[in-house]
Length: 228
Image (cartoon, rainbow, N blue to C red):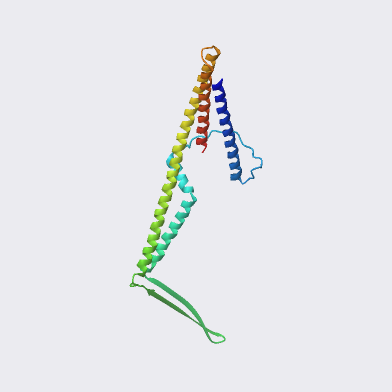
């Protein structure tokens, strides 16, 4: 009888902890949704999510292609490449052309037109290293952006494969915990049957029930990890 009372007390404590955890989770959901804590919130039914499907490489490519930070870095890299071309333009000659047409009227009804075509070719060969310095700075900026882009892409790929592995592990854990619950239920049923026939004690019945409760708690935890 004393053992049964102790087991009941433990179950009641676990129940209160579960209720408190549920209330805290609902309050956090209110905060995430921008709702006041006293506003009514309807909680949907439980569901069991599946592990991530598809090939890891395809999931990684999709994540990299849709990542806003990576898209921004790619745009910056394109701009840096254009900056290198602009800085390198001073290595080449520049041609400026001018075409002008003039109208002259020495008298009211006498008009004469003239055309002027001019072209200037300039090439700054010696600039004391100014162009080389500008090109070097532009190329260094582009190289830095390339390194940052590669690091960001690898970071996203790692996050995807880490999530994929965690999802597969969590699904395997759910299956194992579900099987453990089935086994604990069968064990508890057999012990209860033996108790009814007078071949075992209440202590063994309570111990079997405690194992079943523990298996169910671990199953719930496994479902939670898969959801996260």
